[in-house]
Length: 109
Image (cartoon, rainbow, N blue to C red; front, side, top):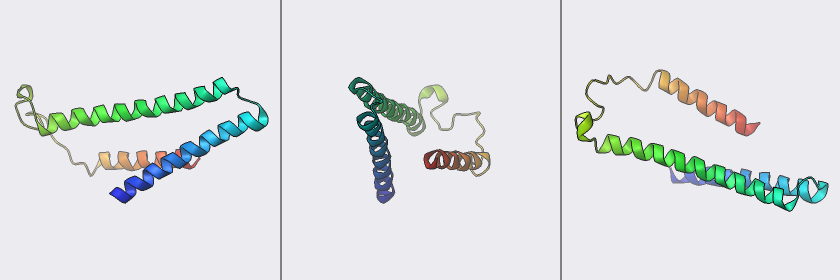
């Protein structure tokens, strides 16, 4: 798991670096961007990534909090009483595969 995480982090940093490099090259050699625009690009990308990290952290925090320590309001059990659990190997697996393929296609493009 650690090697895969490291590979993912390195890949994201590489893509971010090459994207910023291209933006700076367009500004330096073609004169398309002023310094203010360049700083706006960097700040916008940083804020977007921070927003995504915070959103997913909050989402998983809420899920794991409710599943690991269920509260009295849902009967003290997970999943709550009355909810029918379905197999994750059907439609959820297909949706996960499609999502990963879509993400890989967009990244490759």
